[in-house]
Length: 295
Image (cartoon, rainbow, N blue to C red):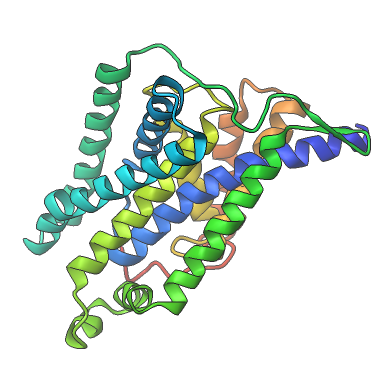
């Protein structure tokens, strides 16, 4: 393998890994806030991609405008889902397994809604960053590799600043760590959980937006993407902010190298093997997040 090919594969894997990492970060946020595995996260990613397709491709809005509109719509949807669907179940002390099944039901509902609205055929839109590779020091790299890295880096830094430097962000972290104590201190736990769902759904939408020019949109794509996002969260350490990023990058790079050097047919099986190996060797993930209290 030449050095140029190696660099291309690393950038390609990093690009996909960061997209998985955003979805994994959304999963971790909800887990921290409510102890809930949201199995609809992948389908929220899918519908985010389709909404972007509608505004950017069908309605021909400028990419930044369509990007912001999609995030706002999905964030509001996440907030309403929390308020009208999930939080009432938390309030009435539903069995966690029932709530978990509720996320699966939501996943099926979203998937069928996408199928009914946009049809079964795969869809994509023109890559807004250009489809002509950039030749840098003898290495051909797609422009969206760099743009996606910049977008994810800005998002992660902004999210860190929000969670650590604002009153609402600190309240959300307090709810994630000690919800009872936070409630006694006057924090509105339900409101913070709803805002966490808003952030998580917004991150899923961004993942869908970034992946749509790379992988054709289909109503069923969310299931497999969700599995890879969950794998990223578990490998990095469920509930860990940095773990989601590291886990996503590991999954993305491993997937690309296996597909290129071995076979693309069994790349998803390989990801499952990587996840199983991590769970056997280091069950808590790389950052060993303490999940015992949430189970």
